[in-house]
Image 1 (cartoon, helix red, strand yellow):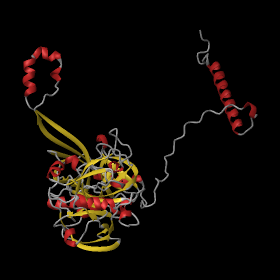
Image 2: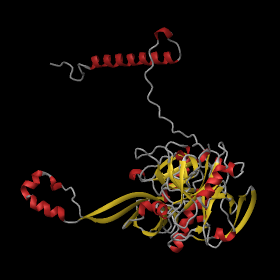
Image 3: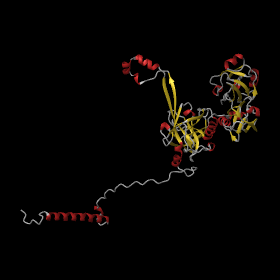
Image 4: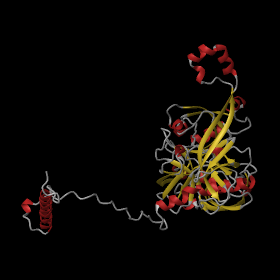
Length: 513
């Protein structure tokens, strides 16, 4: 029993516990302070407690800006261009009468429904839809979009998705398969656009960005440089492609290729690939060509091309030497078409065109594109070299005939002589039988090649059976006797300049010993 009800029996013990706790805490604080002030021996210092993780500072370094970028970074260029690049979905419907795989082809289903049911099902025409995915570039805020012909050219329905996810049904304004350019329009206003650049000022080595939707991955930006200019890839009839190593993949077709100022320099069109994916070789239609084609499609719904009326070919070092030229700058005229602007203006076979409408010409592709883009009715000056002398001819460009077959640029060689460089060829006087055999006109003058020695230089340089020899070293060949007389006078070690006709086209070729 408690003798002193006013006192707590455990009070004394608790007081001692509190005092001991305060003393211990004081000693710990004293040690910490002494350690911070350097009063404790360093050999017995207590290890520092691990510091809490510090917040990682946000990078504030400016994005790289390269010469010619006008103070913009690639980030700013991408932000400006991406809203103007769209997704294009093209659908083509069709019917097929052939058998198609179905989920019911499994034998399990056939046991329930029977073979007769499946035969009736498979014989019915099937409705099928082909869907394509590509890109496009908004070039006018009222909904005008440029893309590739191979993206939308044969589509029954075209749908466009903008960067803000809005979707529109598009109307096809026009297509041009010869350059692979097409134009569509959507019913919208106030849209972001990309400004046009002058692609003629583009140089190899410049930075470019490709913007598009590869494999359906929207708003993708890749960086590269201009690898080459004036490329012909065998994709379209009129080619002057920009080659770039900026990654371009399926779905990028119709997208934007922009320079470091965010201006449109090309429309991404194709890739060179052995795997189906990017290999660092992509092609884009130059903006000047694309803009010219687009303007005609919008105004008239079709493309009208200029026509000069000459067959042309590459000027090789051998041909340049034969014509007494110091270099290979220029384009060789191998024939002049009847009733053409060139014929009326006085062009002649073997003229070398070095300048067209104030621009130097260095390849047949360059000249063909320049002439095709010339407005019909425009008067142009053409500078050429004839018989080693410069000459300027003015003429008016006409509209290219619809049935015109474009001449090829092929080199070929031919000769017939017991000795010398023509000895690898067997030739015959052209007659009705040979004309019929080789698709020639019996009234034509010349000698026809009936055999090319296998493994000979002539064969390696492209001489073919059926070629018609019109000239040897600028001398007309009107008969077999004429040919033999000219050939007999040729030194054995002398190169021979031949003018040939093949499949309706005339071409020059130098055949060296």
